[in-house]
Image 1 (cartoon, helix red, strand yellow):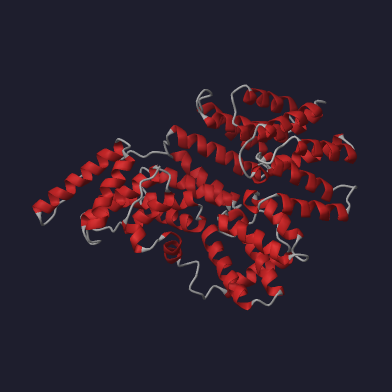
Image 2 (cartoon, helix red, strand yellow):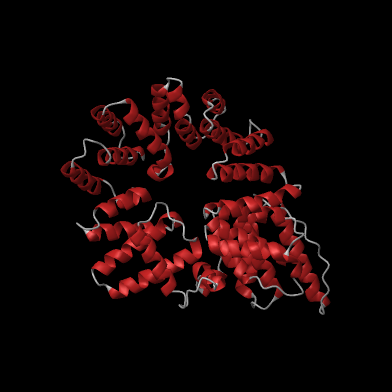
Length: 487
């Protein structure tokens, strides 16, 4: 997403020479941004940031454009740091709207959902006539959807119908609206939105086109229209989909394949799509598809046959291929949920996994599974797994890991660690929102509520978003003043 914005330079200052310098710099920086010379912008900004006082207008101007350049280079943390340097005043006020927009969008990109939602809502209230207003409404809807607040997401998306949005935003809005309808079990309306997204997309160039087709495979299957689902699947496969789209669509079309007596073909297609997938952490990425795969294997084959098939798939993968982790944990899930369940065999399986795999190479779901298994028999292994997950900063898994760490520390009466974990938990929920990748037990829900209530009066009050944000992104002074050239 690249925003080329013309800024009107009509400033009036007390010092004519100083005014001219600042106006020239504004124009120079803007011309470089328009030409996408982002490295050059960072180098030019560095000269100002290293040599000027923070109260100087040029310091704010340089910070603003360094923030824009970093954003366009997808370094959202560095961009956020520069925008913290930007200070509004009457002399640079024409930059305020864009500075606030980039600040909010950086938080979205960094996954800091609660501060992002607050910043987006503030922008929405302050800049009602902004060119970026529709984009802000979309981002608010996206976060609410991620918070499982489908009704609020739909309410925001409905506001976009009165705007003349660009094609990109139209497509994204239709796809998101379709997903919201799906979560509300309103499948015909979801399909209508996905069809609109498909029709607005370019089949030759747009990734959105294939995304829409993939979701149409699912939506038509949810309405028991097996031949339509298969038709969309065949369209997708003929249009050079990504590996992720192939895997998802192969899982979505499975129910239609079953109804049309093509289940073996469907299972083989999903296996083939997985074998072509080379991304790391596949167990996280493909977990939904794997659940579908296993359920149909169980339907079609005996437990002995499924077990043998998975072992063969595992043996066909090598240690450098991320698939080896995937098949290892598929095999484990199958053993844990089959009539052949053997606790001794499962124990050996877990021990072999711990010995064979480095924790760094394992998906978050794999680490949670290992940690949960060793919770009572080897607490240190569990602690190592949970800490590894937390260090990765993936908001979807952090809260569960912190909750279970808290339980481990409580069992051992480690009061200092209990206190620090409670602070971490409140802090994470204040930043990422209280969204969990898996259902909590009633005990865990009560524990989470108790910890959040106990921390409300702490210095990590979730209402103090600006302070939380500064702690997240503000580096030491030396690091802030020096810009490293990005690759």
